[in-house]
Image 1 (cartoon, helix red, strand yellow):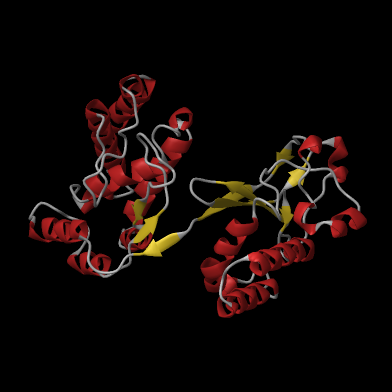
Image 2 (cartoon, rainbow, N blue to C red):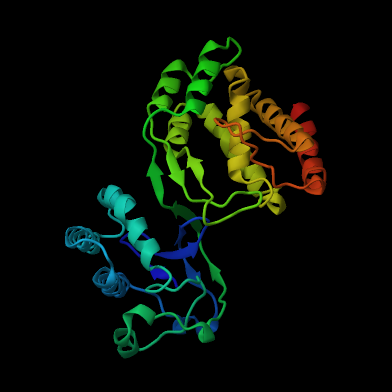
Length: 338
C-alpha cells in the first residue's frame, strides 16, 4: 500500500515490500499515477498509518509475555516515533534504531503485505478495523506510474557480535604485511578492525534452511571502506553500477551490485591508484575489474572480501559460461582498447 510522504519541496510516495530478510522501503520522488481511475486509489497518510500501527502494536503488547517494564519501554518508543516527522533528518538515529523493528513487526497485518494499489475506502471503514483497513486481496489492481527518481533502504534485524573476529584479524595481517596492496590504508584497516560486525538472519544461497541460516553483516565495515575511496575510485564504482544496471540489467539477479562491489574491493587493492584517473585511464581500471569477474565466472568462485566464502556458489555452469560472461568479455575488450 503506497504511503504519501509529500513534503514542502517535493511530492513523494513510499512503499514497503518484503525483502530477504526484512523489509525494503522504496521512496519515489515526483510520483504520478497515469491511469484514468487513479483518483480511486487510496494513499495512506501519516496519521492513518500511525493510528493503525499504534492500535495493532498495543494489542500485541497486551497479549505478549513481555515484562511490564519492557512493554512500557516499547510503548514509549513508539509514542516518540509517532510524534516524529517522517522527513525530519534529526530522527534518523531514532528511526534506524526502532522504526525498522516496529515496522517489521506490524507490516504483515497493520499495513498490507503487497505493494499493489488498493481502491479508496471510506473513512468509516478505515476506522472500523485498523488492523485490516487496507488488506483486501480481492480488490487489488495494477496501475501505471511515472516518477523522477527513486531510492530504497533495507531494514533487517541485525545483532552485533562481541569480541574480535578471526577472519578480520587474518585480513588485517594479509593487508598490512603485503607490499603489493595499494588499498586500503593502514589507518582504514585499524578502523575496520574496531568496528561492529552483525549476525543477520538470512537463508543460505545453497541448500537454504530459513529457520537456522544466518550470515555475518559487514555493513559498518563497508561504510568505512567506501569512505576511504578517492573521488576517482568512487567514480569507478558508479560506472560499474551503471554498467551492471544498464547494459547487464538482464543478469542483475545472477550478479548483483554486491557481487560487483566485492570484485571492485578485491581489485582496488591490486590496482595502482593512478589508474583510476578519470581524465585518462579509468576505463583501464574498469577493464581490470571486468577481467577479474570473468576469471571468477570461469572458476564459479567469487570470494567474500573478508571471509573464505564463495558468493556465487549458487550460479550454474550454464549461467557462468553463458551470455553474461560473453557480455563481460565484450566490454572488457572495449575498455582495454582505450
